[in-house]
Structures are given as structure tokens and as C-alpha cells.
Amino acid sequence: MRLVLVGPPASGKGTQAAILTVRLGVPKISTGDMLRQARAARTELGLAAEGFMNAGLLVPDDVVIGLVSERLEQADAQSGFILDGFPRTVVQAEALEALLARRGTPLDVVVQIDVSSDLLLERATLRRTDKRTGQIYHLKYTPPPPDADLEHRKDDQEDTVRKRLDEYDAMTAALLPHYQALGLLKRIDGVGKPEQVTERMLQVLRVAGS
Ligand code: AMP
Image: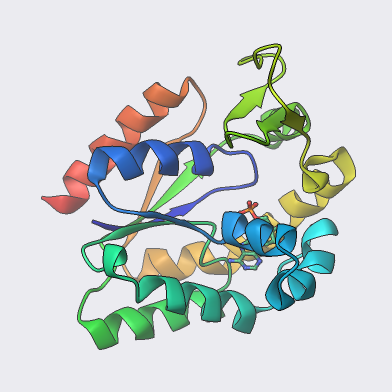
């Protein structure tokens, strides 16, 4: 299964990708995670990306395209993948299509996760990650255990989340019609418990895969 997940910040893309990677047995490739790791490791790429990320802006296309191209060459991505957070622009989508066409392995489906902006804002601003385990919590809905070593992502602060939501709207204005025109786009409702959203997702994938 070669799958792209599209959804606004805090729509549950990362959570669903983590569940689906186990259910489908293909790797989750998250450009956000890869960029955060590069930033934490202070690599050249991480330092170049840092300013854009902290401001809630997109990292330049050539940087993320290079990152994903390298990742897709690795052995575990040959039998399928779940892309989380990439592509975000039509330039990135076209680069991905060209790369997959060269391998003769086109995308199977692009799933868009729909959630209203008010709920997204609440989810992001109350989202916390345990630095040691990477586990994601929500202070209201899925409170962390007392011994968790919590981090509030810099780009989950309210002003930055608003900016990221605006970026997402601008992005999808072009990206979703692109995938619609290719007949690849499916939409699911992202409101509900993670397992309910997973069921909707698997339903869509069964249809796409049949
Ligand atoms: P995410 O965790 O997917 O919300 O990504 C966090 C941040 O990483 C974004 O706000 C961007 O600054 C950057 N980023 C992640 N993926 C991409 C992408 N495909 N294109 C450009 N910037 C990206």
C-alpha cells in the first residue's frame, strides 16, 4: 500500500500513521518527524529548516523533496509506505509522482482527514509529547501519566497553530484539486476516538486496494 495522508495540523495524521504502519506493515514516513530529528541533532539540514518550522512556515520544497527521495530509496520502503505531511505543495506532489513513476510504483490513494478549525486549535494547544517515548497526549482527553517528561511543541503555540492552519488552507487549495484530478483523493471524518478514525481509514483503503 502506497498511501499519502493529508490533514491540517493536529488532525490526527501522525496518530493514524503510527497505527497504520503496524496494521499494514509498511513504514511511516513523516517529514515533520524527520525535520524535528534533524533540528534536534543540529545537522546542517536541521539548522536550515529550524527558522521556517519555528515560524510555522513551510520548509523549502527542494529540502523536503531531497529528504523524502533518500528515505524512499531505503529497503523498507520498497513494498509500500505511509507518507505523513508530504507532499504539501503541488511541486512536491509532482516530484513524488516522477520518482514513483521511475520505479513503476504509483500511489494507491491519498486520504484527507477532515476536522474543524476550532477543534484543531484545541487539540494542538493542549497536545503534549513525552520526550522519552514519543507518545502523544492531550491534556484534556488523553492525560499523560504523572512521570511523563512532557514537551509542548514550539509550533503548537496558539499563534503558530493559526499560522499553520492558514498555510494548510493555502496548500490544500492547490494540492487537493491536483489529487482529485488524478482520481486518488478520498476524504474521511477525523472527529472521534483514534480507533474510530482508523476504522474509517481502513474502510477507505479496502475500497482503494480492491
Ligand atoms: P508537521 O509535524 O507535519 O506538522 O510538520 C512540522 C513542520 O515541519 C511544518 O510546519 C513545516 O515547517 C515542516 N514540514 C513538514 N513537512 C513539510 C513539507 N512536506 N513541506 C514543507 N515543510 C514541511
